[in-house]
Length: 54
Image 1 (cartoon, rainbow, N blue to C red):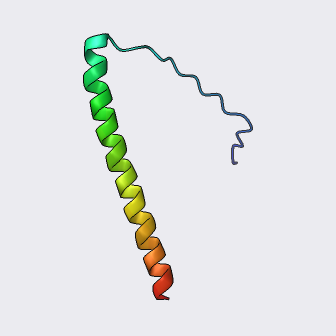
Image 2 (image 1 turned 45 degrees about the horizontal axis):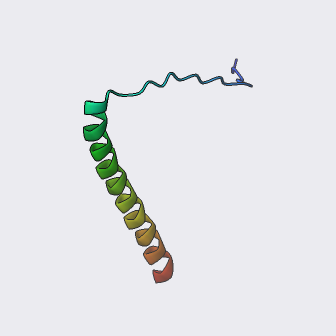
């Protein structure tokens, strides 16, 4: 018998980092964000290239 979920509640607790950790963390976050954006752009360009080849 299948179970149907009609409502999903997600809760999260957010806490601020200490100042000395925040600087290093933001640099890593910025770098990983740029890597993610580059990967997304590469994938979109590959999809567009495939569509134009058809």
